[in-house]
Amino acid sequence: MTVFARLSALVVAAVLASCAAASSHTITLVNNCGTPTAMQLPGRGVYGAGTYTFNGDVRGGIASPCSDINGVGCISIEFTLVDGVTSADITLIPPHRFDHPARFSLNNGATGATCSNANCGPNNAFYKFDDYTAQRQVNGPGSSIYMQFC
Image (tube, rainbow, N blue to C red; front, side, top):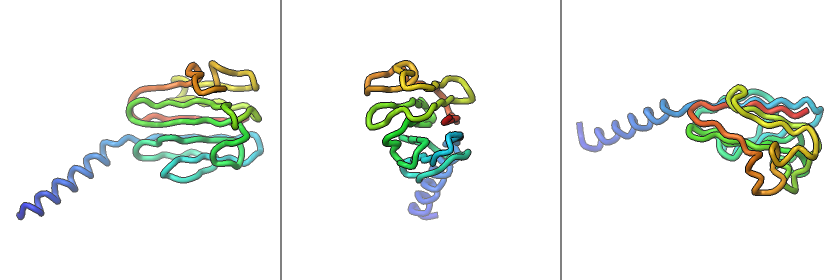
């Protein structure tokens, strides 16, 4: 076997091992508001309500009970699901605003937050960039998030 062939075989083996080592993450989005639903997952696309499973990390996701993929003008849930620290929060930082109740839970209820009115923060929603008590996180591989509007 040539040096190139051996190197190619090692590269293929490393790629397969890294794919096998990556955990999957499940996202469930429910919208009972009767409004459009938008969930933007950078690098993965835009989705509506439903349950989705992704192999590998999901970074910088945002879900909203409105048609704007950035959640402008409505309440939004921001999240990142990774094999280290997974985090999520409800945001009411302008241009977001309270228009519907929202809640989420990470890892089947290990932690979460609920915002049922415009005054639910700062412990349950970000109103400004340093409302860190609104952020929730879990550690470990294979994290999941359940989000519900209304």
